[in-house]
Length: 294
Image (cartoon, rainbow, N blue to C red; front, side, top):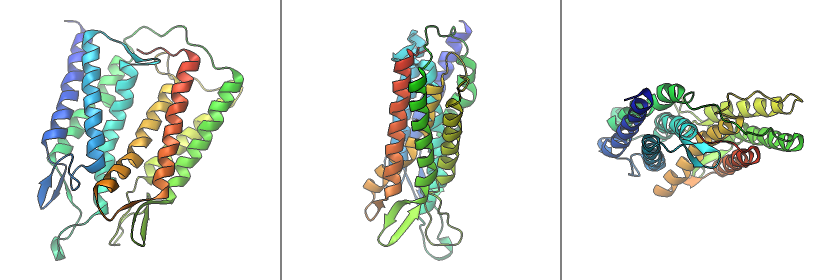
């Protein structure tokens, strides 16, 4: 058995463990324990986590049967890295962003819901994919050939759009993300002794937005911006950032639809639209450059 096969089984083991922990274990403890699909448990972030787990298992199976390209310009390696990072940080967003919004209990027992062991197990299994597995497997395939350079006008258009979207990810977290009656919470609102707390995704979205603005401005230079590698293009990095950012507004939207008394703020919708534009941009660039899925 060669090392490629061993790494494929490692992928299947970690993805399978992530799926099992996601489905079987509790996600939140509010006196009782609540599972992945419960409106008091995983809510929208649990649903997204389950979808990511299924995708990662299928990618592991594709790796085992020797299939490389899944869709045009995106292969097993690139998608494993993109989905692995998004799945890993989706769990962090659930713990530090969604759970603190709601307190439970009375008097001294009142506090933030606890994290279930299902989330802990899912975190330690799925985190191995972007942190350990993908760095080992991404360099195994031969360097992709036949990738075109972007024409100057297209590169400028893609770069300007990236900068605009990055500015959006910096600004939109300051707007209302979750509303309940007269109370509106932004993605930067923490508890700090207050009875209400916002989803607190703003810091991560701010960092992603800054990275996109810097990358977009650097691509506007005559020399452009160097690619990470022949099997990992800037368009793949753009897709990764977009999918990662997408989990936050999408998780909020699904969660608010599951729970009565919560409204979705304008900041959530604008961030969702921005992420969809970024995903479309990454796919369009892959198509324009004849990107190769590995």
